[in-house]
Image 1 (cartoon, rainbow, N blue to C red):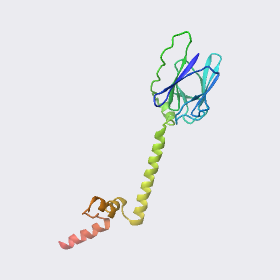
Image 2 (image 1 turned 180 degrees about the vertical axis):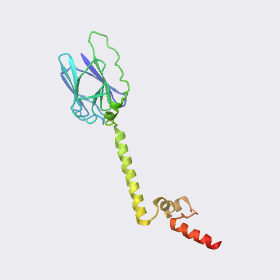
Image 3 (image 1 turned 135 degrees about the vertical axis):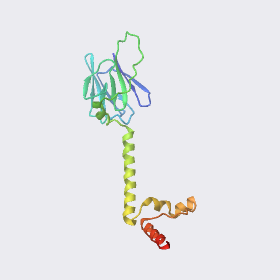
Image 4 (image 1 turned 90 degrees about the horizontal axis):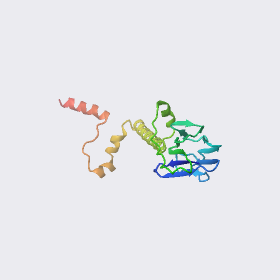
Length: 194
């Protein structure tokens, strides 16, 4: 008899006895094992029993299936193999029912070699969406500043700082911004006084 122990991102565990010849794994409830994680595809992978051997097969999932740090399409499982379905880790265990039940082996953090670094870039989880959102906000701000500079031939930030609503909120700001055209006039006025 074999089993697989999943460790979710919140460190809760799901232990599944591999009693059927075929068990599907994925985010959707119609799977034999449902893994509630955004990094897991709807129909992520299948574990199949062939005789006394067990195999895991990836179904073209977005974040892939890894065995002991190597991304795989289909591979035979060995006792103690560490699996990753997206960001969800698991341990495969072969065991005899007559042997006393042992504590599950905890999966160790994945160490990436140079070859694994490129494939792991696909499993960033939420960080990917945060980076995309940050890039969009920065692009919008840059476009806004560029449009202001083209239309008014001056920078946006001083115009915001010295605007009437900001002055009312923070009190009167006594010093007016010096714009490039004003610098030339003030230099000429200073030279005339001398």
